Image 1 (cartoon, rainbow, N blue to C red):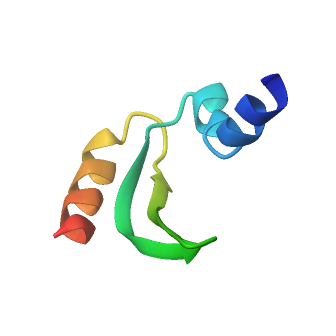
Image 2 (cartoon, rainbow, N blue to C red):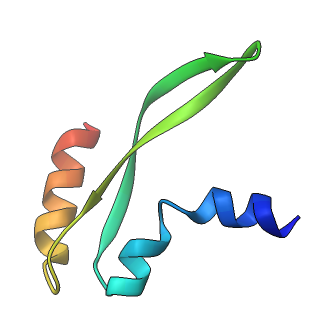
Length: 62
């Protein structure tokens, strides 16, 4: 289903279109409809600042 694919990608496409580095860090889970679903924390950094993004992601992922 094309609509479901679009809706699944709606929060990740802006970083790709802008050419910005982005990362998603696992940060817990929520219960929805009797299932436990993972939750991620997405971060973006300025152009060519992958170093900042990775250092921050590593610090938060500990």
